[in-house]
Image (cartoon, rainbow, N blue to C red):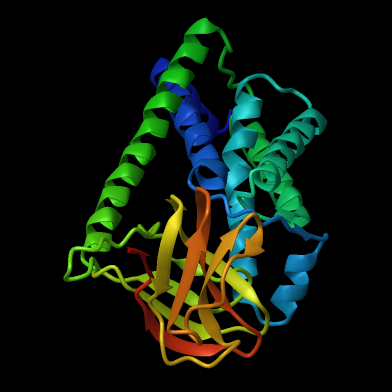
Length: 308
């Protein structure tokens, strides 16, 4: 018997309990990363197989790290499947593929991300690697999938799912306070509470970073038209103004409003202030939009005021 296998066997019941807890935490983390933490934006897209490799060959390093991350993300799933008695690597592969497919379809249906065929491939590879790893290191280990195991996994899942939602609410309250910093001196409230999510405009090197005073730093280059959601706001009928970015040329970078999957008003940026009137209650998405040839380094303070 190999030394590593003897050591793993001697961990006994404590290891089983720990793995049950970790499995529940893993499921919560997986769903949080791929679904719960994302913001719907009414945008749906599809990336064909090996798209990411074409981008990597063009020098886009982001896709390399995304591919590696997608493999690592599903390695624990392979470990789980082997631990719960899945004896066939073919079956484990199919479960890994189906799990990834469920996530990709959910992201598409709820507009939480782009359907990426490469994600399916890399998630499945991660599942197979996890399965093969535990099968080699701890071949005979198995956790009985009984009621006790299910209860412990579910308890761990619920606790680990609640914690991020609690953190998200704390961050939301922080963004509410930052939005209030930009109320007008006459008492008019800024109605736009930003989401606070740093990131890159999709498939570009333009970084959107939130500052501690409620403003946004937009910096980088883009060779295509792209977006990044910075918030959404539900507005009642009335007259409104949208502003927060000045001194940029048209079709370089801007702030955009969207409703019903369509651009709702001209970009703020080339236009210092956009006035609009609502005749019914509307939920607006707010984006940073960048254009082909954008080379920007600007500070934006997106605000929406209701005008009398």
